[in-house]
Length: 301
Image (cartoon, rainbow, N blue to C red; front, top):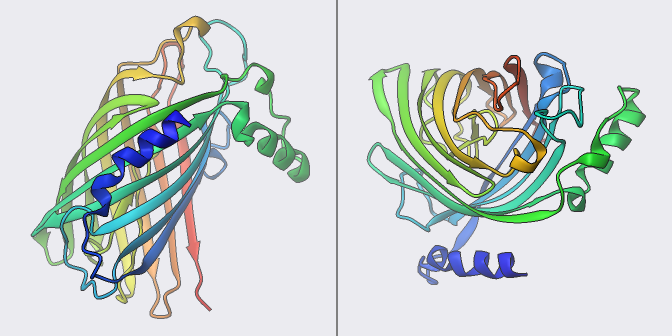
């Protein structure tokens, strides 16, 4: 209850938009990430799903607006697992995380900013371990291990802020350098860039996935065609609730991500995204990084 109260207090600035300005649903964004679509090893950042609902002025003309005008309501789940040695000292403990938050997307000229707050629940209370066990049983996949020693129940209040700049290099190439700060379950400062090749998607509301860094659409224009996105970033990690000291596991203080993806949209508003991401080791003793795949399918009939 205390976390929910703090969330409501922090959301007061999001209510600064004039009541005379009507609001509407501007779009939805979603992204499913799983290492089944990557290296298929079922470990570490093994799966996540995020669903975003974007609302704003009904007369929005796709130009950037002031803080609080466009809001994204985000629901996200993630499962993190060991590589198979379970309770051994130094191995990553199993963890399920479920979060709910509100983020504002704003900007001016070529600048784009995002600020938001989330409440994240961790542990058996999320039901994610039971969901994964049932899903693996139904699909005939390997048994899920070490859920009986997963991280305990906890709540974390988090803040995320990102600043990005759209730099038009040519008619078909846009660079998007960014800096991001996360405080909550993990305290992370991150710097990186993405490059968009082909159809310019930067007038859309683009949302950065927490796990991979991929940019997924919260809104989409009527323009059809392909856009290829390449990205990379480096992060400094100050603290992480997913690597508790009492478990004998230590988070690395540096992380890196490399990613490549393709967006495609038809004139009938059917859109597809597929991307791959390489994630460097996240804890001391992790022998190698991992490859994950991300997928989005959107069909409007």
